Image (cartoon, rainbow, N blue to C red; front, side):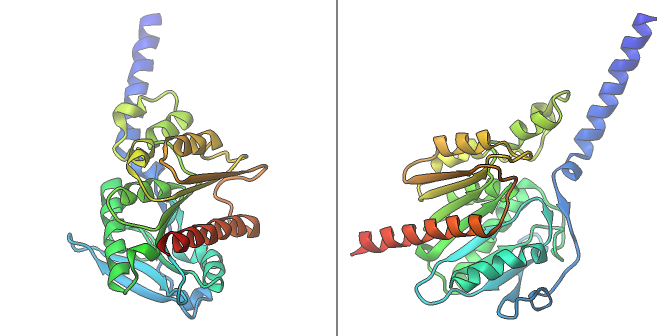
Length: 272
């Protein structure tokens, strides 16, 4: 009887592991595929851009131009939703004169294809090049990663010249994060999309700002602190008591814009 129970248990575990392996990206990416024009989301001064990837996919991005002398945020969003869900944040930055170029991953917001780490990083670098083709200088580009997007931003920043990097609720790696949600699975062996930010952040040499809610129940604030500790100077971290995951309220907005103002002032002084 005991032997039979063990055999059944092992079999069920093997089946569960196989299901999780083959369906793993369904547990990472939660796209809203419908395409909405920025004007329909209350952003009349934002233009839609369509980027064509080398493998023939079409990516949707929203672009609002910066006011003279202001930086542009190259924004990589989280693992759920759509561009229109970030319309309030876009409006807030535009009202401060910042520009914003927000890419939607494959399968999100009308972009074709399926998301993966390899695709997202390649597409993010394509978005960087597209922003420079719009006439924006690298010294005016600030990468912004939100949740999953922090794993994208960390890798892009190792390869592209930027003015600064903002990491909103960063995680150390997808393996570390998955182990918290699925401790009974050998995720380090199964996971394809690993987003090893803790490794990549050591090769980033632009100024870094980390913001993280201390009540984050998706990505523990301890992960944000570890990413910050591994980062090179200059760097700054702000943790927010009682705040959850990737909360974009007026307080967070003011803190992030305050850091951008300090960054720009320091860079202007250094250039004199």
